[in-house]
Amino acid sequence: MPTFDIVNKVDMQEVDNAVNMTRKMISTRYDFRKSQTELTLNKKDKSIHVLTEDSMKMKAVEGELSTNFSKRGIDPKAIDAGEIQSAAGDMIKRDIRIIDGIETDTAKQIVKLIKEQKLKVQAKIMDDQVRVSGKKIDDLQAVISMLKAKDLDVPLKYVNMKS
Image (cartoon, rainbow, N blue to C red; front, side, top):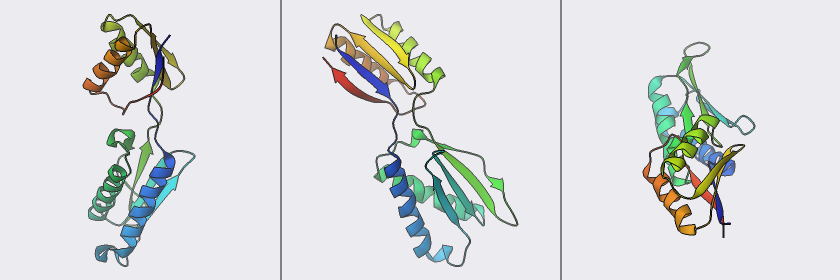
């Protein structure tokens, strides 16, 4: 029976490359000279910590980070930027979380959307992905095109198509 998986996978090596490119930009830009701007990536927690002096520099770092993410093929929907908080002294900080995997609520929403199509397919939630199976590949392709047309909160990838 043909199947495929709906996943949200972010390549952490590409995130690391984007963060390193942003660090390099910070070290060469004139308006960041003599500023205390830090950009750190925690691969375990899948988060980025930005610490800088003012909101103008924060926007510049976030803009460059966003540009580097898009150059690296990382969907902006996979990034969850937290609130700007004040840190020690005159510094401000922001934690940016990388969303990897499909959360349970989103997975339930995907299954519901698939069932509303009344196609002869089955969708089941497996950890942080959704597996869709059916007798006809055309039905599976209809599911993929329907999900691409919907605007969900996470970037979806369709992998492991087996017939």
